[in-house]
Length: 80
Image (cartoon, rainbow, N blue to C red; front, side, top):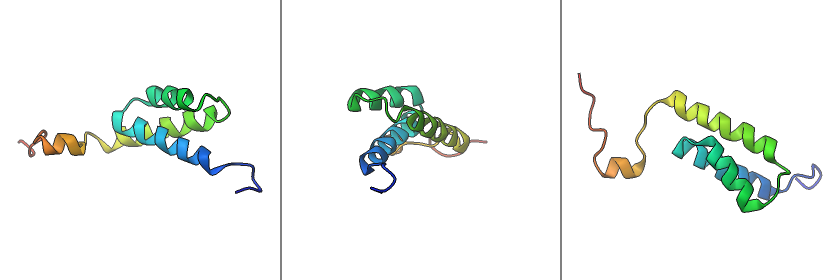
């Protein structure tokens, strides 16, 4: 990756933002959190696009339980 000028750390920060945005379903919070952690705006556009895409995929998959919700017994079975 050294010939492209993109460091692996950028992908790590993008991954953290994407994971946070998808799990919490709050893409702007994930973007702001990553920008505050890194104190740089160099990769704001890729972060914006990737977090919004992750949020879209999470919403398209529907309401799924997080492991903590599953452990507490929330969600139960299908009613109907």
